[in-house]
Length: 421
Image (tube, rainbow, N blue to C red):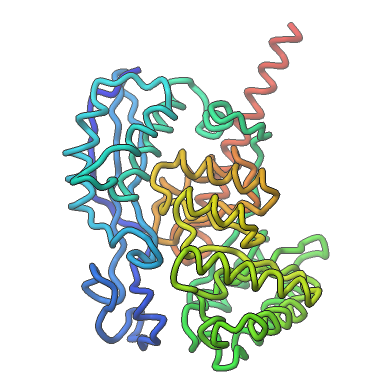
């Protein structure tokens, strides 16, 4: 099967792109947006509508393979690429990617994805969003050529050994931290609520607001859950605010996080990005010390690494150092999805929790592709996205995993029947 054309279409992302530095500096809300001027280069305002680009690979049998270029909500910080624009992404694909792909036979996903990863513009790699969307489309094309799911393609090409069953869903609340938790509980989310604790104003001047919220979430689960068999994991993303409030002091941060773990009981607690140390090496050191301090206190609170853990090399460094219990493999930041696969397997094989994450600012298509990848790599959990409304992300990612698992199970039944005959 050959690629006969590459079509790009600017589309909407599932949320917004936000200037994290401005928000962390306590930019005030103005309705749904923020007041004040942006801080991070590339932002025209603190909150901007998310952009994306669909990549459509037209195949010679008339089928169309599809991936979406998208970037994280908080672009341009912690070593990430600058804010993407649809215009620049589409131009990059037309100038650098389409000439390489048109006329090519789709028969080796890994080789073609690595080739896209190696492309350069003015001596620099193509924007992560370009590599992300194009390789999604290549994975889809390869699966179509073989007549199987994308999950099976990844499992077979990377020899993951996965049974290809749905993995736990992690759901994020956005700013609607209370109503959305009710939705998560009623729909039996596996991991919740994220919480979006992205400023000290949300954490509390002494961490008291988050402490109260942890207790509220715990009590709400106990009140609303249909039965005692529903035992979700509590996972809060605090965007470095614990470090800001407690002066990045390891002992004080560990005491505070351990107290949150006690409040969360009987549920397990994860805290993502408790402190931002300003660079990769410093971040690894800070998280190693914090993780050790928690264990010295007998706390079971788990630390999840996110910022400064962007690329495959970054994830390898964090994993080898044992800097966290959970590694957030933030899929848009890794460029080509083959890097996401490699990262998830690296973390899994090291005995850490491999979180197939991403961002609310993705699209339905990138979410679907990543659902297949999470299944193929036996991820510890996968982010429900796009958007912050709970229902949409759980539907898109959860349903895609269920459909893929059903097709895989059907194929296995037919194979067994054929062998028996």
